[in-house]
Structures are given as structure tokens and as C-alpha cells.
Length: 370
Image (tube, rainbow, N blue to C red; front, side, top):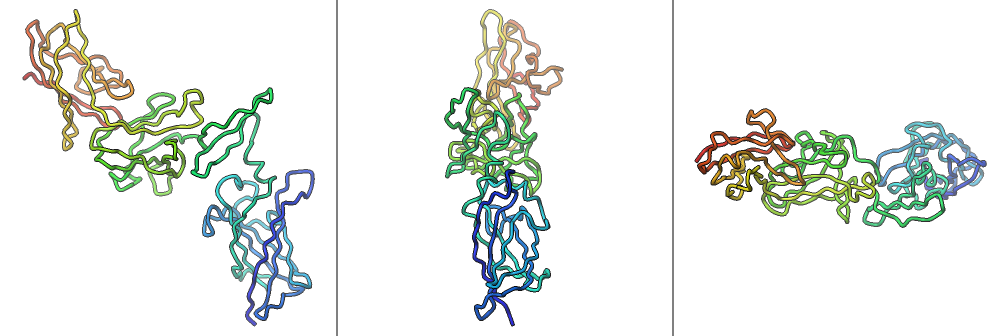
């Protein structure tokens, strides 16, 4: 006779000893097609803990072989069965909803029938408590409805600090940029350069309404980072947006220098580089605004009235980054020495400076007298 199995779910946090329990109780009843419980039968059950959704990734799975009672009731301790996949103790109960999937074979074998998937509406306190505080000095992470993470701390004198926005996991060693400009193709994502111990940055042209996100590696399984409701960089956040056509500085920096590793923000800022001339006696040439050629990725600035009183310059980027030329070979170097204009004299001359800026702040330049 074909059986129909229905689960009655009773999740009860239980203390099995003075130690933190590594299981919680579960009860289910199996009915046949006439609605009669399968009494005093040997059955096997496969229990899986799923992450985030009813069809989410299996975090843990185990097998139990049990005998029903006279009413068809089965009692088992989830977390104490025969492990099939993952580790029960490594489940982070404090992040994402959790679902339990139960499969049953009334013959005690492995021909399982799915008897249901249900969300765990509450998780045993002892399991959650293991994940919210992991050691001295670490706070409790709270997550708001919009996904923003906050940390609650207490000092050695018992003073409770109000929550501040907190990045749930540290930034990865490498962070790449991709977006709608390359169809979110991770294979061609661009690596952000470590500008200093806090900031990572890159430079590129973006059309208006370009969406930008970040990933930790150049493949389809990479973790994606975006913005939460406050602009903080968080896993699986929304896209940052370029509002207009232009050349952009893309950078990630601490949300607060008071806690520089607790949270990070990404910003994309449209800017134009500038030439900054060195001068003797305060004499500076007149400069035209920078123009940009999208097709060749080149900037052009004209300097009028250049003399040997103002023979050299450097290129100012965004956030105080400066380009020069250490080897006088036509290549741009971060924090390089000033670029010397050739053949200057006391007689004013006009020059056209054309240069490229690559994503990693390298580039080339040419100087032409006009």
C-alpha cells in the first residue's frame, strides 16, 4: 500500500548536560494512505539543514534509524544522527533563515520520500549564543531589517556602548570591480589597488547609469559585495551607480576612521585630473581644463606661457594621489618626481600635455610644443 507521510514539527531547545547542547529534539508522525499511523515500525529518516530558503544550500545532513511507537511517533535529536554532509557544530545559526528538510523511508533503508521542508522560526538559544560572541572583546552583531549590521559592545567597567554599523566579515585580501559596463562578467573584473592600509582604489571611464559591484575573485562563485541602505559595503548588497558619463575614481575606504576595520564604504566619484606646476618666484602658466577622449582613453591639457621659471609639473588625481615620472621615460609613476618640460627658456611657450590613466594609476604621457 502506498504510504503518505506527514510531519508534525515540534522544535524544542533541550539541555542534555551542563555543556552547550549540540542537538535539539524533533518529533514526526508517519501516516499511511488511510490516515492510520505506522505503529511500531522500523523507519529511517534523513534530516537536512538548509540555508536561507527552502531550496537553499545544504549546510548539514544526517541519518537516523528509529522505531515508531504505537501511535507512529518518532523522536530524534537533530545533531546527533549519523553525519552525511557538513558539520552540525559549524552551522552559523545567527545568519540567514534556516530550514529543515525531512525525508523518510518506512522500510528503514535509503529510499527516502520527502515529507516536508519547514522554516525554523526560532533556533535554540544555546546554538545562537555560540555565534554571537566568540571571544573577549568581541561584541554581539545585530542585523536590521534592511540588512545593516550593528555591533553592541561592553567595556571592562560594564559600560554598554550603543551599536555602531559593523561590517559582518572582513574585506577579502583582494577586491575586484565589475558592473553593467562588462555585463557583470567576473572574468574581466578589475583588481582594486591597495592605495594604503585602509583604502583601495581604481580609475576608469564609466557611462551614465553604470552599475558597479565588487567581488573577491574572478570567477562565477565569487562573493559579491554591494551597498546597504546607508552605503556601507556588505555582502550581497545593491549596486553603486555612476550618475553621468565621466572618468571616475572608484575606491573603498573605512566608513569611520575611529573604527577603520569595522565597516567600509565604496564611492565612485566623477573627476578631472589637474596639472600642478612647480614654480620659481610664483610664476605659473595658464592651463586649459582637461578634455577627455573616450575612444583613446586620453586626457589633454594645454599649458600656456611656460618658462624656465615653471619647468615641471605633476598630475593630481583624486583623494590626493599624484603622478610623476621617476625615470623620465614617458611613463607615469604614483608619487613620482615632477615631469620636466623640455626646452623651456625665459621666453614663454605653449605646450600640449596628453596622458592616459589606467585603472591601476599607471599611464603614459607626451609633451608637444604648440
